[in-house]
Image 1: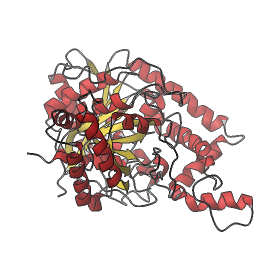
Image 2: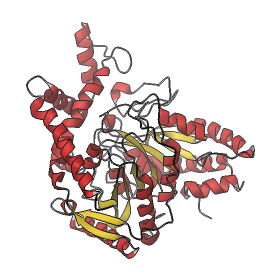
Image 3: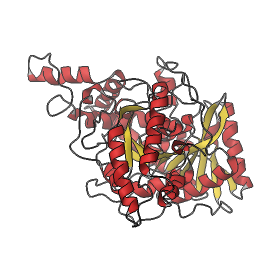
Image 4: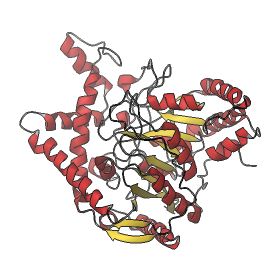
Length: 487
């Protein structure tokens, strides 16, 4: 029999309901796994074994009651360390919040608690979710389970690693420009960015408020649907969350793709995309054709504006959002001060890392008098054109398929002195955030022993359709459950 930590949430859900295992047994299995592999991959900033076992005991009591319980009841889940967890340290991987303990739960965390999940800990990320490799963490880089000399992607690298290395069953991440999908691709797991507004951002430490969205990492597509069911919904604490009827995101699973039209944008298979990565993705698209889907070549002509648009909008919003970290109310406060102005400058100078400082400065400059129209306003206009491109494309196709990342995982430190190359790692994912669309990544092959990711992009609020296509490919690929060998 497989180790419990290696199974999927839907397998474990059935075993828990049938009294074949207890949540305590499952949780102990995951804790033992964390002790075994965490020194090699460093997925977690904060581990919570005592809390996890307490919650597992409470879940077992719920399961023993005989009442119908939520699907994630008793399932170990890891939380990205930029989501507020009452009583548990929340750092955003920054020195400025290294000792911050929130007095409340974010909405997603509250929803998961209500499900009866078991929290294994808080996972590593690029500081304030700014990065594509998890090397920008103020504490340590996480390592890719497929090759520990390589990055896991970012910014939700720790969450992707935890699922890939079986250090949890499901995890939560956030995606501002690809921060769920890109690490999911590099670590060989499933990752979903829902439509903007599907999931409440209340309690998520903000990076770029018009781009940020919380979503799940999972071992297969069905688990992704289960996790999405648990976290979506209108929230009065978040004015940008949408009020839609509750739905089952797994309702279209096992219905196949016959008759669906899958768009393939020519702009995503050109310069900058590794030919072997492109070939793996095209092979996956051909599998969808073999399953009955119609493949349609499309064009997204504004793709070339994506990077420039994103790297104006996101830093501008970061400049505004991170102004609250001033050394006054919470977070790091310098001891080397002479007056109140010096308090703020010195606290921020000591607390923020280089990448965060760079993005704050870019954003502040672009928003300053005399430059607002030239940069921020123009980026917003480009955003409208990008969204219109997708609207046009979706008049002729149901789903769009592209590579998730143009390359497989690269070596730790390899791009440290090449910021442009690092930012190009997001070239396939950022337009989705700019347009506010749902998208997901799933494994579709390997290059040099490292996973390649297939990205599926959907119409607004059509997550169930995305999951339908993803599972149709997953069933044909045989890649679900393929795991790295890390001992």
